[in-house]
Image 1 (tube, rainbow, N blue to C red):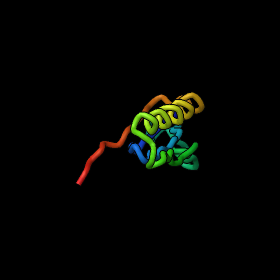
Image 2: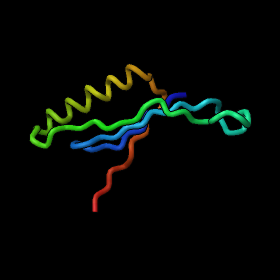
Image 3: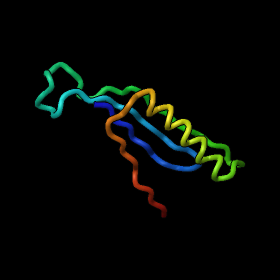
Image 4: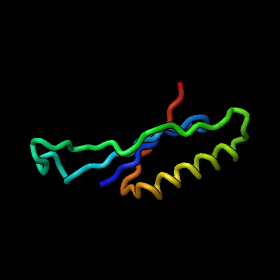
Length: 82
């Protein structure tokens, strides 16, 4: 199973893509990793861009990641502000 995790933000959006093997830790052989990192990175937008342009960039880049890796699960961090 492939999982896409997103740390949202309009200026910078982080992402990580992992692959899991099996349905539980008990399914795994003792010498095999349960998680594999497929990709991770940061989608940056320019601070001078208007919000619609930033959202378009995020949409385009995230769409490319989804088409490339075909994740079965998407996880988005909850936004919070101090």
